[in-house]
Amino acid sequence: MEEKEKKRTGIDEITKCPECGSTQLIRDYERGELICNKCGLVIDDSYIDQGPEWRAFDSEQSDSRSRAGSPMTYTIHDKGLSTDISWKNKDSYGKSIPTRNRAQLYRLRKWQKRIKVSNAAERNLSQALQELERIASNLSIPNDVRESAAVIYRKAVKQNMIRGRSIEGVVAGSIYAACRITNVPRTLDEIASVTRVKKKEIGRTYRIMSRYLKLNILPSKPDDYVNRFCSKLKLSVEARRKASDILKMARENDLTSGKGPTGVAAAAIYIASLSTGERRTQRSVAEVAGVTEVTIRNRYKELTEKLELNVEAAE
Image (cartoon, rainbow, N blue to C red):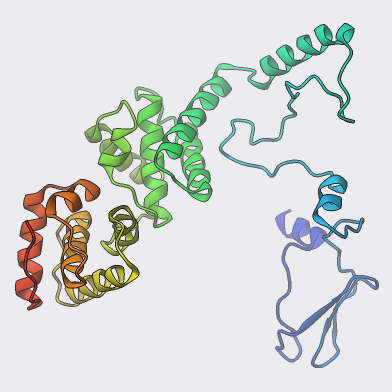
């Protein structure tokens, strides 16, 4: 069924000529043909034009002629496929709706809002995804990570993992897992700081989800935290590059295994700030990284001694 759908819509796109192996393909939309530019082979004679049937010469025309709605998203309980009645009292032409018709429009809005959430399961999903948006906004998480977190949460609902657990805890675990999968890591302390769930419960929920949902999650690396921590500390590109070099040397000398990635990243950033003359105190680095000053001092001593780095600590 999926293969037929791909052939019908042209989603399974051909990128190479089966005759000569060339990737220089020409799409002739007037004839509906896909032609190899090198050997002239007609690869497909029923090629579908995926673009619109209208033309636009500027962005204003493109916006006015476009008839497609917003794309499907997993961050809304109905995937964004339902209609919505605007709260502006204006019609499709932008004209104000007469006063005599506003009571009817108010009733339509009210019933539209009610029928969008038809049962308890949808109501819970809607509430959970709103909570997901709130947490993600507070943590400045990108949209692709939010989509991944919503997909993980929906899988958890299907596996009946919500029963006996708080919705907020499962949402927090989903966000943490999505951040790890997409290499945009956030620490458990950061997620716990914007939720009413304890760090221990989020970690427990995350471990259960990764086991039962079979999430392919690799351990986070210190390098994943360098750019974000350096941005918060307002360090230059040179300091970031120096911190990355220190972490690379530490990895080659097997100094990162078995240690918390945030602590190692914080120590590398601290050493880099001293090396480049952009001195930051251990306390300021510890506050940004969410670790203690003792952890930074221990990692600092290990890295400077084993890698033979000549830097003077700042108090």
